[in-house]
Length: 115
Length: 109
Image (tube, rainbow over all chains, first blue to last red; front, side, top):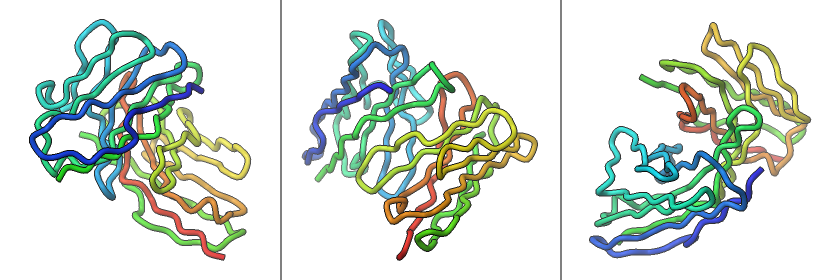
């Protein structure tokens, strides 16, 4: 399975600011995803990061709030813009392994606290 | 819409067997996944079922009944390190996973 790293691992930010989270994979992958996991909750898909085109957002998530870049097949960024305390969450990137059942492998996550 | 249900919490004793159930109602079905998530860590892939029946992998087994919209994860010979949250996730379309809220399993000595 792919090895996925994320930066930063955690951050504390002030409301109204923005934070960009990086996701790096050690091999080329077609599909990359960004999830949010709020305290005590399960994972919610924010968007699919498409290489060479705009990200595909899930219902309730918009590009102005969560702009995503995917410049190549090993790297993606998620920006959390104009943050509020409600954005405090763990943000995870994942990649899909098309070798078996399209299972997804997750990065270690970025724990964001907005004050 | 998508709906995935699993118990919130379960407790079991070291060495015992525990079964975590998951029921789902989704607009499509391309397979069901189980993930394990320890506190403060990312989810790790445990199993995948797309056909009815039981898939066994060491101490862990996963069962699927598509007609009933039902799956379970069976953990045998429980160890303390199995204390974690177990997430049921359904693929209902190309590369789209919907996760349940997870079952927190506490294994006691």
